[in-house]
Length: 295
Ligand code: PMM
Image (cartoon, rainbow, N blue to C red):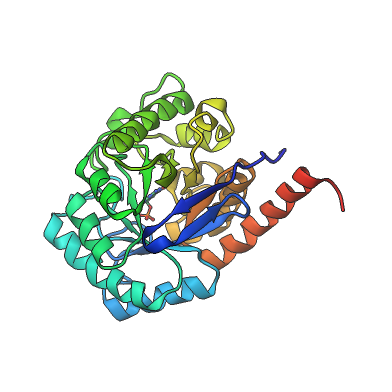
């Protein structure tokens, strides 16, 4: 495939920090602190173990750690705010004190987002793209936290009911534009936003493949925002590799991360940080050759 020229952005974070996006592909390591996540559920359910796992990801080259306290597994039961906050806040606090990279919090709830930013998180990752709680945008606006807006329809428990699109990439781009408008209206600077087409969320496998293969389409590029993509261990990969447990999908996940990087994704969200760093560095070399010509 021909690599796409990736646009460069500088993402402001609280405290005057920034993340440079586009020069190389950034790797966001997933730290689920839930008892029921589909791929690593129950492994990091106490703070010291979560911190150790995050430190290992940083040592393996993670640029961001994404902490999630509510499972987004298809059909997962909803978690109330107090429970999610109790899972996330102590881990974010410990991480912010011990890891050098920005900490992101994967939540759809403004209350959890605010507590996490106060505990030291500098990015908010909203898989509902502000459809669940628009007040989350105000947390970003007031604190200067960066905001990832992911595309989804419905909630994880019922999202496949809404997996009908005329043209999945164009429809996702249009719906992401709505999320972007909500954020900007709430006072979040456009430069603080990242978009994510949401592989596997309200999308059948064929639709996720269409999104992964359509990242370079003008409808997405015209939004002119950095792109985050999460393919890691997702079930749609099984359409390519056959039935495998989530933990056995890492090779396919690396291939998907490579395709995403060559298609212009700025950040990949992954479980296998070390492997993904190697994969995207290869993609980055190819992108550099395409940009500057042979050495
Ligand atoms: N996927 C999951 C959870 N959060 N956030 C973003 N921005 N993009 C994703 O693709 C995404 C996400 C589900 O995977 P997990 O349960 O392994 O974290």
